[in-house]
Image (cartoon, rainbow, N blue to C red; front, side):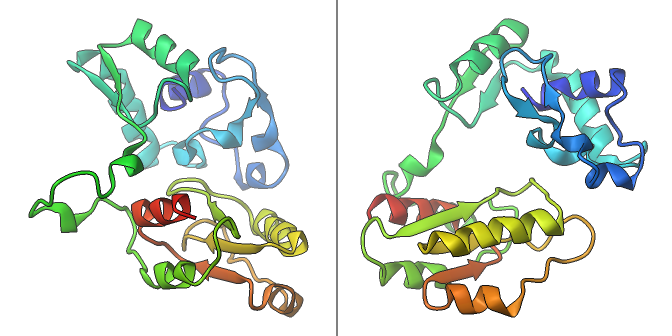
Length: 219
């Protein structure tokens, strides 16, 4: 639904962003009240392809082009499930071709027969499997898993603030931080952060999502 409303962002003068100050001046924190099926969300909660100051940005314009042609499709497949986003799915069903919710896909892990193409995967990022060995050594219900997905971005200050929240929780955590998660300069955590979380944390760039979530479900 967020992608479907990109044209609305343009019409309201919200995208592309006016200048780079919009990344940090609170502009992205404004609430959106014109998407009734997605209540209590901010601009920054939408898919972040509109977070650009370039009117000719390829990703941004590609989204506009693709979403303008959705009505030409014979079906609309969404990785979600009814009980999670019923209002959104109902709205999409009234706007576009037949909508099929096929999630959550991780539940299919190890439930399907082997196939020659299985090893190819579909992750957008190179996966690090060492995290699975780290998880193997942990007790059930003992790890907080943090992953912002493959498209969300944030400022360096926001990342560090979130990290300190994890540190002060005193809980064991596994945190995936993509190489492009931070807007602009890279985030630098102080030495004290490492001291505070030593022995109870793992930070990785990207891991095999299906295997991680499946392993966490077994905790």
